[in-house]
Length: 478
Image (cartoon, rainbow, N blue to C red):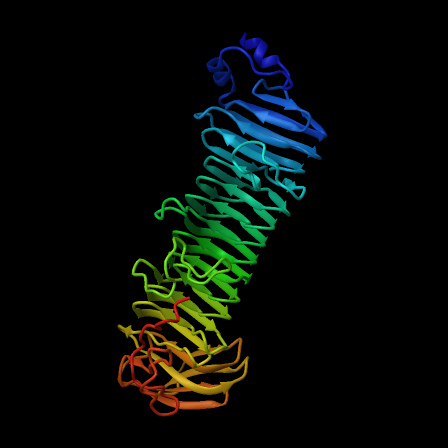
């Protein structure tokens, strides 16, 4: 029986004792050769019906060639781990996923070294079961992507890569174009490496679990990401954590979103039509409710943004850094250009905003400008500059004329927020911003109150904007 199974062609249905078949398949390697409208293989764990290739046993399966209209389905046992090696594979599915992981243990897709692979959908998704397949790669199981090759994914009617469990990416080069989300995971989405170019009509990278608010987490610890998105560049219904890597979001509605956002490293450059960073949602393309319902105008103590390292550039049409709860900065470098409209500010927070390390420079409109509510170990200043043009240079010097900071603002602005470890209470500084030059005497650690709804009093002298500490922005939560 076993010898017969090993010699049987892929078109034959698997027969005999299931345990024997699994034992024969586990750890073995097979080649699936795609040839236009069908495929061939010599493993009894693979059945072929026209353009539908079904893998039913554990093992490693190398896929090579071109399939014009078909799909690879993994439908193995619950404990069967399956690895698919794409080696110059090109698969188009007219009405479903090119690769569908329906059932198995752990699933891995490996890009063979030096290979160029392409997966696409023809423009519609028609249900073949009750899983509502809507991605070119669609997995109901834990899925890992890796390898030293490249993969192009085109999804004109849905998502690019989807896992309804955990999704991890270790390496590889990916070009993903999708009408909806580019890369989507449910419980944990962990990106530790790889090079991504993503053009998405929805979120560029999306982690969402609407059943358990402890899940839906996004972690980036390496890799390079170039993203244009119709909605969020990076989105998590849970926690968004970035510790390393290069993230460039050149177009988005909101740049980086999560119930909490933690940045400890990496180089991040965000361009957003609305908020650059947004903790706990608020206003988005689908409505003005937070991820799990509720009033977005209310403070949320569970929401937070923590920046302890890395470099962050934000160019925002709405708030630069927005948290329905707290904002804490202990390190890193942050540069915020915008907003230019008076209905938003570079900071917007529901409870507190504290700074105890790092460097931040922000330039934007004065109407809703907010300062940090407290500073420890270094000072922070909010200074009115009058109207200054885009491209104006902002420079801060100490009393001895030493240049502490120089930055060129991307957009027009009316006031500036600055904090560095060199700014200390009791010292005087000269701030030059475009055509404005003025002396700032740090009589307190937090110099200059904002002009938001909760900060109408204490205008102070020109260039000072009052000595009130920054207070929460009241109804300006979205």
